Length: 142
Image 1 (cartoon, rainbow, N blue to C red):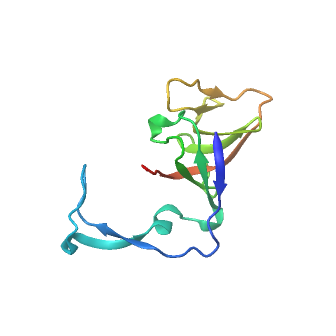
Image 2: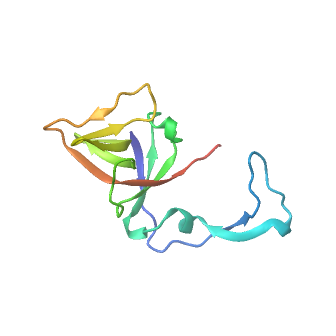
């Protein structure tokens, strides 16, 4: 389920954040400036086509196996042609859902990434609209 939609501003501001050159398996990087590699703007990282990008807030746990949790904000790009294997924002019979798209032997499936939920196999007469491909996920731990 989707609980909110967000559109990027037409003139995004730049806010660069330091990026350290060392990888961090489970800890905090050294704050020493010697390791500072560059600065990063999150817009540059998450938005590849601003005119075709929007964000949605997720509710539910059907995609937990893909690392998508309730309250995460997904980055959706409408300019990407959805192919089998992409995680997509779709409307099935008027209801939004986020699932992994699978096209197999002429059939279309929307697959959850949580075994507690059944796959959705599109049947004749059902309406499917793919609104875009999920390209990123923003999490908050607070």
